[in-house]
Structures are given as C-alpha cells and as structure tokens.
Image: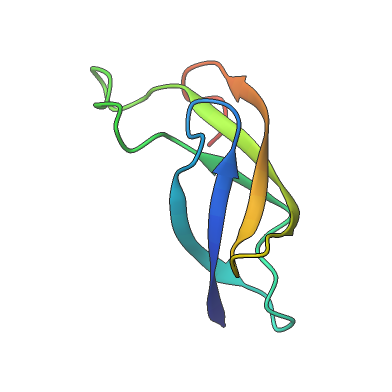
Length: 77
C-alpha cells in the first residue's frame, strides 16, 4: 500500500497537509477521522474528532479532504 498527500479543507484542520494511506489506484480513503494535531489531548486522552471526506485531486499534486462535521468527544473512534 502506498501513500498520498492530502490537504484538509474547512473545519478545524483547514490547510493541514498530511500523508495518508492510498489504495492501489493512488487515491486516499473515502473518509478520514482526524484529531487535530495542534490540540493537546484532553484529560483521559479523548477529544473531539473531525470527519473529513475525500474530495478531488488538486492542481498541486495533493488530494483534498473536505470537512463534514465534528464528533463529540471520542465518538469518532
């Protein structure tokens, strides 16, 4: 399995660029649950999770993942 570079669009992780696993066709997962890396973990290790869905490849060689919604603490896992 390879990797693909993704830019998150909208929501708390707007403009965050990450490498995600790619399928054999080179596309990222349909959906990705992300806990923003700049947010320190809440006591007990849980925090809000943010759902993003695959959008389209951008002209800069990255794919985009668009914000869908935020799950309450720990629900996205």
